[in-house]
Length: 102
Image (cartoon, rainbow, N blue to C red; front, top):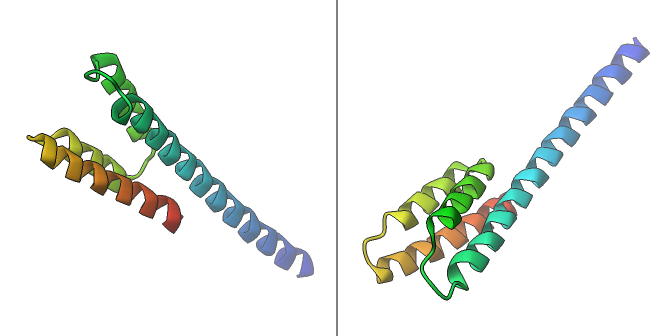
């Protein structure tokens, strides 16, 4: 009986550790996307080329976060520069909120 209790306890502990590891990996991917976005978009001295857009799309999908992906798509659909600036702020807020809540 004691052996079964120990097994159940260790199984829960492993599950918790796996969950923590997944959250850490998700946070790392969100922060990697954020850094890439800053480097390739916000600090860019020219228009963002096709390859860079593809790199950003791949990076945002790696975040595995629906809210971040949705905010990214909202940014991409902006029609004006002013709207895009607002969408960038929304994107950064959502990324920070996702990392903080993990």
